[in-house]
Structures are given as structure tokens and as C-alpha cells.
Length: 235
Length: 111
Image 1 (spheres, helix red, strand yellow):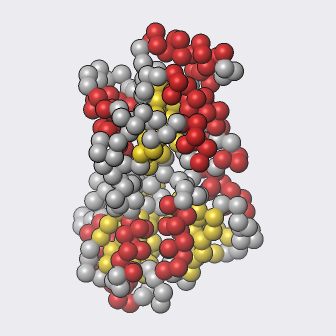
Image 2 (cartoon, helix red, strand yellow; image 1 turned 30 degrees about the vertical axis):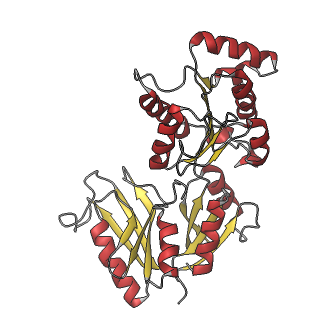
């Protein structure tokens, strides 16, 4: 692969765009292109399948062995709430290969000192998510306990097909949350998608352990997600 | 600096290495059979001194891939390598998990 192509490939990945390289094994020539650009003739189906499934593969086309390597955006976690759990989750998610964004309008919580090196925005989710949009490669984690802050992003995440939607709170808190979201027009099957109480049940007893439980829950959801349910336009 | 999943990403590392003027090869898993430790598409990048980032097998065959990659950098010709327990070289390098993998090794950068 040429240096310019490698740079373009990396730049697309940093922009969270799906990108694909095709390498002809006989002479090692390669091309890259973004999802939506015209595919080379005869490869339309293979390219569509690669983008949709996220699976790279060797294919035969016009007697040539070609390797299609597809790079989908890495799963991302958007955390609503700059709380103690979020501090631990920021560290863990980087190790596990997730992008992470934390949003909290409460400036006392959302301080750079508490979140060194973390992508943190001290503003309301309804304003931030207009610019930093959710997508099906995103997990939404709401941990403020405050309906004024959590409810909007929870509904937005369910609406756009985030692969994981979790909300912190007791069963009682969650029951009243479900009532509010239902009154706000969220369908029953969407309400059931919310992981609450949040995280895998490992008996987590402190913020760091809860962060581990949440991350494990997110990984489980990501690895078992149904590709065919991802909206065509969103892949 | 932001904590991002790209800090140790092999393709990002490769781009930095090329900009630094280092000679670089990339190894990519192009086919797997049975239980393979790393999925198709996984990368290992190697420079001419044998420095590397990423993985194609979780440690089983990296040593062999790195030495082949140094050869690819020096001669410019891409290679396809096969590894598996059924291979006659299994006593030397192979996959203890019982799978087989095919790896493409090519030089990166312009000519």
C-alpha cells in the first residue's frame, strides 16, 4: 500500500467512516475507498457484504485473488455523567479499544482535572448530540441518576439503534424512568433494550467494579449484535 | 493527549514510521480455518530492524512472520505464508489451537 493511501485510510478511520482496501495478491497493488463510493466493476456485491458484515475476506474476481479488508468505525461509548464510575470507565474503555466521550452539563463534575486525557464536554446532551451524533456503533451509558440529564440521550440512543443502552439506578428508579420514556413515545420493545440495573451482574461493589461490569456488558452486546438489524443506511 | 484506541493501532504506527523514514512491511491475516487466534484482516507491522506492532496470531507465529517481513522489506517482493498444525513446519512454528492461518506480507510505502 502506498503512503498516501495509508494516510487516507487512517484519516477516514479517525473520522469514524467505514473504509475498505482491496489488494490484488498477484502484484500487491491496492486501492482504498470509502463506503458509498463506486465499487470496482464485478465487486459490488462483495464490497456491500464487507461493509455490512464488517468481515474482511479473500474473493475471486475475473480470475484474480483479491483481499478485501474492511475497517468499520470502532465501537464508541458515550457516557452521560462525569461521575466516579465514568472516571474508571474512561481508563478501561481505552484499554479495551473503545472510543469514549463523556457529557455532563454540571460543570462541578465535568472538570478537566477529574478527567485528564478524556474527551469531555460540559454541556447538555441535547446540545452536544446535535454535533457529536450517536450511531449504531455507539453504546450509550447514562449514569447521572438525573432524569433532566439522562432521559433525552436515552431516548435518542434507542431511536438511532445504538448497540447498547444502559442506565444506572435501582429497579424502582428504572421503573419510573420507563414510565417517563413510555409517556414520551418510546415503544415497549425499545424500553426492553435498556440494560438496567446497568452492567453484568458480578456483584460490583464500588465505582471501579461497576465500570468493569458496564464494560463487560457493552462488550457482550457488541459481540452478539445482529448485523442484519443494523439499518442499511447506518452501516 | 487524548486516550484513544488508536495509540497502538498498527496502521497508525505504520504511518508514523513511514513519515520517520523507516522501512516498513505489513502482515495481514487473509484467511483462517478452524479456531484461529486473530480474525481475518488483523495486522502486524514490522520495520527493517524487527520492531513490530499489532498481532496476527496472539504470539504463536509472530517470530517467523517478523523474519519473513524483514526479507520482504529488503527484496520488495510480497509473500503469502501459511501456518497450521497440519503444516510440516509445525514442530518449529505453528498454532497450538489447531487452526490454520494464511498471512500476506507486503512492503508499505512508495516504491
